[in-house]
Image (cartoon, rainbow, N blue to C red; front, side, top):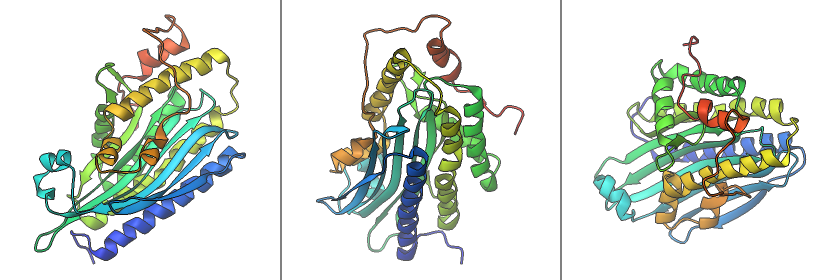
Length: 311
């Protein structure tokens, strides 16, 4: 039966889906890596809830990767949340999600990020306040059109059953969200980003979250296989580490999930597991004009319609 407000059984179904998604993504990435395996770190949050953080390091493909599931709950929201959403005050909240970041060793294989999450806040005598959020985005270091088009094609196709306007709207939101204002540049080539999704009612909103979560491997694994054997040198590795610095800056300054986790007393080690293993910041470093490194900023770190002519 179609319904607009989530029940306790619906919340349980979201949790079951998210835990299964974590399992499937970890199994696929372990198979792709071929060498390392995820280590699991289960944890409890003092204020309520917990999760399982899975980390893979020093593999045949992945220098570091994290796939985390969390389900936290409590009776108090941080002032930053209630100031933005006063209707959350005095409610019991639950927040659950899967978040992942993959940092490959090879600079020709892009870093990838994905997140799907659900939030609900309840109190007696009132309808619940709830929404879904998530998306996925790609951060290449040596970019090429083939990978960018594939990534966005999968994103578009995942959105297609929900309306022709969904992909362009959430693609634009992603371009705007993953933007480093202090640098005046995009973090990568985007993908999808959505938040506060509840206007479709629970069932359709949950179906959309599943479509996005399920599309991640279809988007990322073919890019891995195309680029993983490409030879690279120390200079290219250094450029990857320089660009990873932008990733760190975004996560610590702008990322909603990171800030929410830290403000609500989340587990710091799990919240920051997305940070890359090695990073460098050189003072006012600039790429050589006309170099592949310069090409990244000039042609790829500006929002583009990657599917022009395919719509």
